[in-house]
Amino acid sequence: MENSQKLRVRFAPSPTGYLHVGGARTALYNYLLAKKHGGVFILRIEDTDLERSTPESIQAIMDGMNWLDLKWDEGPFYQTKRFDLYKEYIQKLVDAKKAYPCFCTPEELDAKRKIAQDNKQKPMYDRTCLKLSDAEVAAKKDAGLKYCIRFKSPDDGETVINDVIKGRVVVANKELDDLVIARTDGSPTYNFTVVVDDVTMGITHVIRGDDHLNNTPRQLQMYEALGFPVPLFAHVPMILGADKKRLSKRHGATSVMAYREMGYLPHALLNYLVRLGWSYKDQEVFTREELIEKFSLESVSGSAGVFNPEKLLWLNGLYIREAKAEDLLSEVEYQLSLKGITSVDKNLLLQTIKASQEKVKTLTEMAELIDFFFIKITPDQALLDKTFSPDAKKALGLVSQALQGLTDWTSNGIHALFEKLVADTGLGLGKLASPVRVALSGKKISPGIYDMLRILGRDESLKRITPYL
Ligand code: GLU
Image (cartoon, rainbow, N blue to C red; front, side):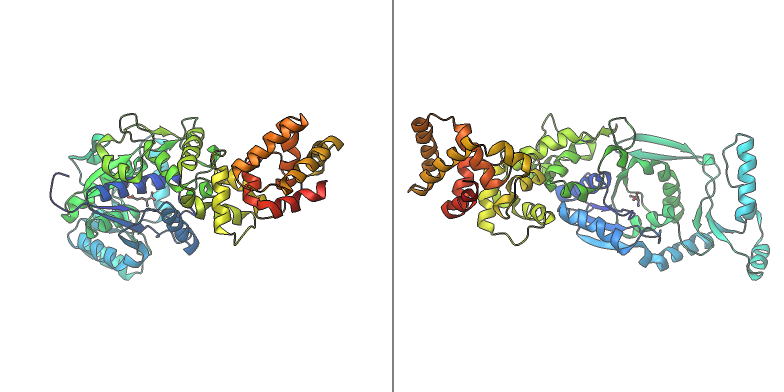
């Protein structure tokens, strides 16, 4: 940062029911910048759309942020609790003749809009009510006519956005008509509340999706009208699907918490998202500390990133393989709970994580691989028929007998036992191991056979094998 003012950034979602991965990336960029510069990261809930802003959908945003461990320093602030403040600033603009009441009815406006469209002109408010005298306004108010408040956009000149990512964007003021800043019920509109909020919260950098770039000139006009200092703007390109259309449910899961359910690690998702629009040399994998150190707005790309589920999966697998088993505990517990398996023994769980983390790319796969340690899984009939032929039963009997006499119940001891059995019986390892695998796990695919036996222990292993002899 060039100046010594403390950096203050915000993430300002409108609750829509869940935290979208695009929103999470915006939150992440804000968070990283705040951490990097010892600044403040604010959460502001833009909840003026009362229909969508239910307590559940607001909670869903915070759940997503908490899961990703994107801790905010101030907030959450709610716009619905700040209506008095917005009113105060609207009044300031009206008093300064920079905003005015408009009594045009929706029908009148629709009719004018239609004429403009028929003439292939851009529909713009024609300022009928700007021409009203004070006396006319007072008379209409006395008559109880409904009115909204419009911002008086400058007639000429231009508004310039110096965007850190998009560069210089210039809009002719005459292209912008007089925007409604308070509806007939008095409620303020987005382009106004966002300015009042960003100013009163001392925001120094506005980092948000470039779907808001069109709104920025209007917001800048309001900064100007209110005499507010302008923050730095950085509009981040959208995330696209493989078909280059904006990422949506058509492309697969877009909700952060859906990724949790699918067995992704929060940091793997963040590491994936951060690279969708930002890069540091050709480094792919970053710790959180590295991200904080290396992130900068200047190296955010101006073009949209394409969401690649395969790459996210690869990254997730990498993080699972390299994680300390302890660090996977809570998420694996969550996965098991989705399968109805609760209150598991932590020590047992740790061992099963270690025995499976090399083999999976998601924790859902991991839970699928290790659930039998905690509950009894009965193999389906097809697997039973395929596995337990008379020969296989005979092999299982040999293994069972040998296991009963094994004194060294360790991976090495079990390994040596199987090697000896192979040598003594002339049976292949597969022939000996496969019925053991199915008897212990109820599955065709499982963690390594030596790990399974070691972790289950002699008693439990023999208990599971015996019914198949
Ligand atoms: N509430 C807006 C949204 O969810 C963001 C507004 C902003 O960041 O200025 O898209």
